[in-house]
Length: 207
Image (cartoon, rainbow, N blue to C red; front, side, top):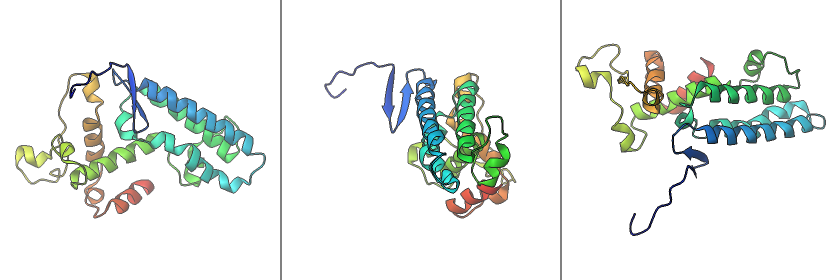
């Protein structure tokens, strides 16, 4: 390219995300898992020396960035990989809350107003769709998303829904295009019509 030879690699890093040649995201999941496990170890040691009320902030600083970085891009990975990160998040959160390893985490997340990994995926995909619908993304994203009304021309209650194309391959079914559109279409018209992204995020976080 431009007179320079390109080296073929199995995996490369871009914006903190490991992109493998098959787009399985396994290398990125493995790398993220190691980082979360290391940070969990730090939390485990610190819990004996620091006041309990700062551990929520430590979670937001040490754990959450690894889970949320470019999440909509790689959240289409296999359920097995997502389950792995869910388990690690719960383990880290139990250390944050200083509870036993068998403690149910659902109420703990709610009490600290923090999101479980599955909810984080849902919100990140919804926010991405909001940006698409409101022309807040680069033009090349706008070209691959269309509204239902652009297809059938009727102004119905579902006019603001994003069109869902049918794909045969499992890879395309898990693409960001399909996931973001599906997530957007599950939202009520009231939520879809939020005037600002901050309002949109706020409503989703408490829904």
